[in-house]
Length: 207
Image 1: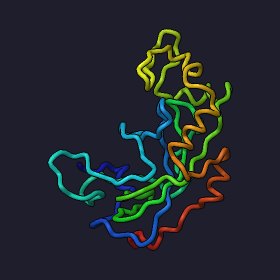
Image 2: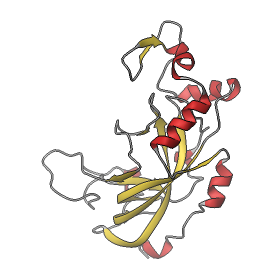
Image 3: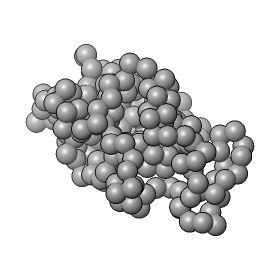
């Protein structure tokens, strides 16, 4: 798959290198109805640890490949514009977090594309009437009276009534913690960044 100008910012001129140790990066996920974390660019729900593969048909290269756009993406810095916006724990909204990556990696000026990654921290606020009005503007669910959503157990409900059928925000957090054990949870993004600060990757970038 040919890389775009955006993807070039997560790439190294030349073949992917084997990175000693781990890289630290920042990214966002959409919260699914059953409290999984889904990649924003496609429909894959992340397990606690992930191995990259290429989505191009009829390819046999390992991800990431220098000539392709494959790999697990993350930004070097938590203040990257790609990560802007409110982070709310609510189905259809997004949360922000930290990943550690290892194996083969393409390292660019804005971020990296890696072979392996795992989620190590998440930051979000609990839903309130005030922050949901802002956050739901980017939600995949339209909260209108006539809109319907299928729940994980097959029930069809009014999207406006998701709160009633999915339980309380505290229950969502418990389910998320159970699905991603060992991941550090923060209610303040600044506290997450203080605990997991950016790593200097200048030595990995071309001169």
